[in-house]
Amino acid sequence: MNWINKCKLPTIEAIKHDGHLCIFPENLWDTLHNTFNTTLNCHIDPNILHEIECKPTFQWYPFSKEEFKQAISKCNDSSAPSPDKLTWHHLKYIIKQDECLINSINITDVCINLEYWLSYFKCSSMVVIPKPNKMTYDQPKAFRPIILLNTLGKLIKNVITERLQFTVTSNDFIHPSQLGRLKFKFTTNAGIALMHIVHSGWAKGKSTSTLAFNISQFFPLLNHHLFILILEKAGLKPKVSSFFASYLIMRKTSYLWNDLSFPSFTVNIGVGQGSALSPILSALYLIPFLYILEKHLINLKISVSILSFVDNSLIIAQNKSLDISNSYLFCSYNVLSKLLNSFSLIVEHVKTKVFHFNRSHEAFNPPLLDLSLIGSPTLCSKNTWKYLGFIFNHKLMFHQHIDHYSNKAISTVKCMKLLGNSTRGINPVQKY
Image (cartoon, rainbow, N blue to C red; front, side):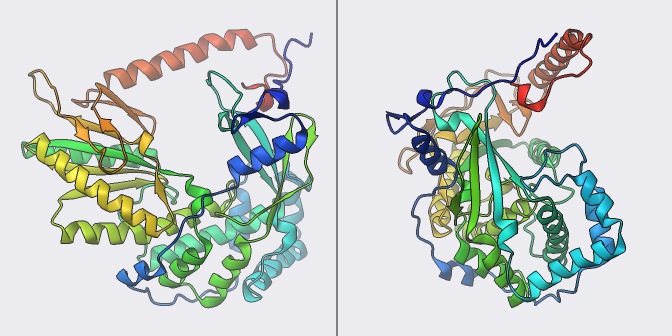
């Protein structure tokens, strides 16, 4: 019995944008494009990069067979098929032929040497799916885009990603506070680092105060001109920087909504989500910001620590007085907000949160943090704080964290009974 049906997206007439309904498919495509691939017109200050040193130029060698073999061995055969209908299973079989492997390597080396990324690899399809647990689905922000890229292009990007991360790591360009979008660094690293800082403060009799902020439209806002200058600062050869200049522009994507599709839109902003290169490129863009912010805070004698995880970052202040910690957080937030503007980035003030760690047995009533002069609301530390999947309380007891994930695991196990008679299971499109 066909007891499971695909979860259809709402009709296009149900979607609102700027107070208007999407009456025709053309309205829907414009709405989706304006939501996912349009950015604000922000100015940059290239001179800001003069504050960091330029790393020695790193030699870029031709790619090897081993690099391609290692990259393709990590690819999941069950991932969604690409627009070219070529699956990883098929490509792995093709790459086993030595001649095909050599041709793939030659294509990659020629692209780097000619400073050009093939237009064939710039085409993608964007499947729109609903975000879970939303009250209503009448706004485009209630949906998430899933990018489908050409399979051979994804393999080449995987190889370039590994080489690029090795290069910037060897040049000691990565900032120590970066814990996201990098190899061998995960959300658990951020949680462990924060716990270590909190316990170190308690050992000195100090409370720890954190201010979490989020960068609005992070991926679309990354400026191409400034990014190329950052690559040069990282020590990449001019031909590699020029290759990325070609890679970033004139990308094309087509939107898919239920059974409707639109031929293509041109995308000339950001680094493109869904690509293997996006994590390392976005991390590289933030590196100068972190170095310069650290330098400015030291010059102002503001004693804080920084943790960065992609577009979510933390300012951490430790002091015996929460009022002094709040003043440090206020000054730091003011400095970073202005500095981000020089990188064409904007803080999403409504998502800024403050949280204080204190293991005192007395009643804990931390003072408010007034950020209204900067454009953010007055913040109050709540009893719990959810950050990167962790649920913290003031004393780092993790009671709420354990309760939440235990209940989630028990619910999952109970739901498995519903699938006991299913021979096919649930498809990804039926998840929501």
